Amino acid sequence: MDFQRQMMHSFWQGILKVFVLHQAAQGPIYGGKLKKQLQEWGYDISPGSLYPLLHAFEKGHLFRSRVKIFKGRARKYYEITDKGRDVLAEVQQELKAIMARMLSTGRPTPGTNHPQE
Image (cartoon, rainbow, N blue to C red; front, side, top):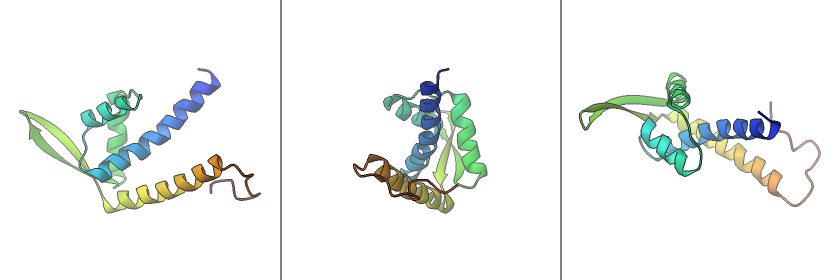
């Protein structure tokens, strides 16, 4: 994989996490619906990548889940928790600040253009 593809892959991995948190903040989500929404954005994700992310968010207490029967099949819905909302708000704030600096026409002020590590 060339550098540009690696860079875009890494970018989408990060955006994917923000996207999933954002979608959950809008209401309960499930894997199939997320996959379809991501395809509409031009990102094709495999279940082998999506479901571990959902499980990790649940394990990290960003989501809680419940199973509902839909058309005779069990479907796991994920809901964002208060901790998940706090994480999303912080990420959105950081993302806004980073994008404002990156897209500004002026030169960055020394010492202010690096995210905290």
